[in-house]
Amino acid sequence: MSEVHVLTTGEAARYCGVNFRTVIRWIERGQLKAYKLPGRGDHRICVEDFVGFLRDNAMPVPAELGSATRKILLVANSPELAAGRQLLQQAGCEVDIAGDSFSAGALLATSKPTMVVLDTNLDGVNGFQVLDTIRSRAEFSSLSVLLIAPQGETNQQRWLDAGADAVVAASCDRSELVGRVNLLLDA
Image (cartoon, rainbow, N blue to C red; front, side, top):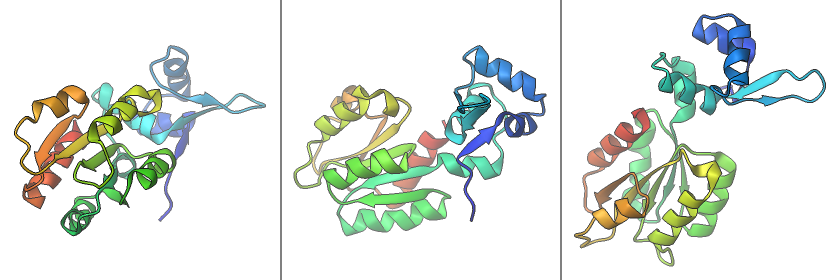
């Protein structure tokens, strides 16, 4: 399967049904994020930025581009959560798994997920520190975070206040987890 990571202004224009000059105007006005190639100065648009632009402007997202925005980093080492990977893949998500905070940091930087599902029951991981790190970095500003609260956690609001977009209990049903992921990805 070939995966598209960047688009030309002409390709973006075809997806929107407009002239490529319109796309260039969107870029020049700061409405659509893009970068210039050295030399001729042609623009290139990251697929994730283009899909975000389409959603922000209530435009339809082509199916072949929509899957690029369903990349999840699952930070967990429990076998039950790892089994949730199959359910997420069946729901059309691309899922990477990290079993520790070091691997999670490396995958966060290299795989560019659109969502992190963070199990706070990991050994040696402080969920609040992870949330603080994610929320303090500009490159992760659009990243959604679904937090799996520790066993016995009664105050989920403190996780939301710390930067999580949603919280589920560790004992939740896997279909509830997938449903919550879909809600956040489609928002």
